[in-house]
Image (cartoon, rainbow, N blue to C red; front, side):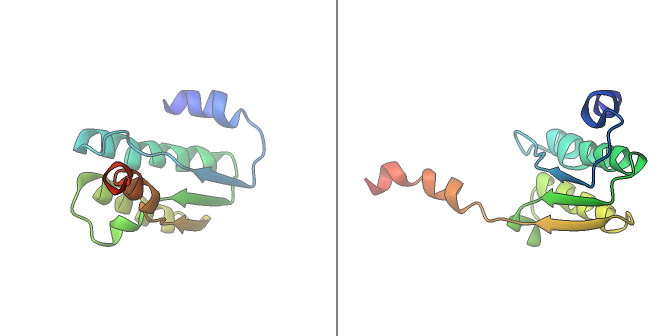
Length: 108
């Protein structure tokens, strides 16, 4: 909710940076474009309006070879962030631990 973000999130306070770990719950196309892209676009706009100078984005390593909607949505926002004029960092961790957790029962 963009209005709630401005009202309750930044609350008119001064921040040097925004760190975003937003991610869609399902990765399904509608969810991915609503969260991985549109919600980040709103966050970026609110940050810029508040005078924030830097954004750190938690993305995902899998966007290097995009096949799924959430990967394309993440990449689309990454491009917007890079063109925003803010200082930015994009962290693309692997899903190593999530992948490993699904194999523990089989390994036992």
